[in-house]
Length: 473
Image (cartoon, rainbow, N blue to C red; front, side, top):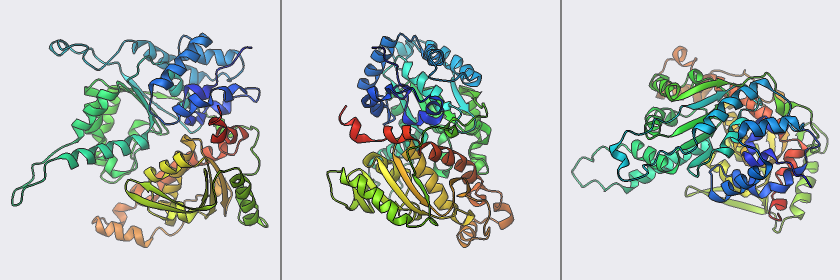
């Protein structure tokens, strides 16, 4: 019996970005390889994952990512897209160039010879849902090295900050009455990462945090000097990264470094494949004004909880030595409110832990998100990114339809913004153009959130997110 190779095998769940929406309904063999896809879902390459992928791909007879892509078009699994093909041709050439490449010295004598010049990486940008992650992940699956990592950019920066903290903690304590020596951990952290990977693939390369923005130039400069090749996807061109961000003048030199070591590719067909009509998983998005809607969600939760080997109870998550309490959960199902998830000071590390523990999350009472709630909107964007990347299913109860959830209006003179402006010594007129106050970044990123939540309501996404079936494979 002939078996088709599911694209989710060769890429993380975020490959849905363009891939799954190109898939036709007849494509059903995806269930055969869920155990391997689950390994991909964690972001980092592991030997078992690589061996499983390579054995399947070699059995399929594909010579590389472009051959794989062309084969999927020939058998009708994908539709032809000239923009995707152009990018795939470029990445296929990089795949060939990377054969035998290593940034690690092969012998003790290597240091006396000139290091081989690493090939340039690629920065792939374009609108939401056009297939950027699909082409990157297909490329990643065929690169023949164990020293590769594929990770969401949020997760990568969290790991970088943890490494920095660990190195600082390992420094000798300052003696009483003596000044502590200044210590810069960025270069050692970059060296650590370089020893672990000669290829880094980043999904959703975006910069919104000033703590990230201030260290990126030095971090990536050291990674590139250590021979690391970077391939990244983003919704923004390099010159728009951290646009109107606080102290952006200190960030701008990073853009030049990125453009020096990575060629920019645009993938923008004008089609959001996530929004193409596909079978629905049933009603998963509810409006507050619907009659008996709370009782409907209660019943859905009870039906899912009935299949769990657990009781309904509060859960306390341990995240970086902090306690995060969720009031209602049962096994791998969590029933949360928007207030629980986005009104509290939670971040990417908290949402990644939730994604690890739960395969279904109810999010109730999402209000209209105006500029007054841009902090909460930013958390919701980060939450959906984490859930989507880990294939977590969602059931939503909101005050407004998905497309109307975030609006660019409201009171621009919000008290919290004024306090922050005063603390930073900024005049109101000077601060109004900064993204931290204008909500521009949230409005831009929310397009991705709408696109992802649309896909998360499909039957295919819902079935793939059921972890109980994976444990049986």
